[in-house]
View (cartoon, rainbow, N blue to C red):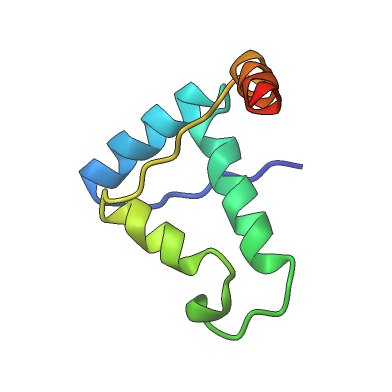
Length: 84
């Protein structure tokens, strides 16, 4: 059962999160739910214990870049490497 909550975030964070969610074909609500589920699914004692805390910090500060590759380019790259 879904429940509604109200959260406040920096406008730039919201803008970046919306773009990320759109690019990954997921709603901002489901993205937020997914992140909370990941955080709460283990017994982390602090944010620093979370395995991707450094990456999350970089994303929140706008420094991280995630490049998504499609299967075709990965396959072509593999076969090119095998020819050498």
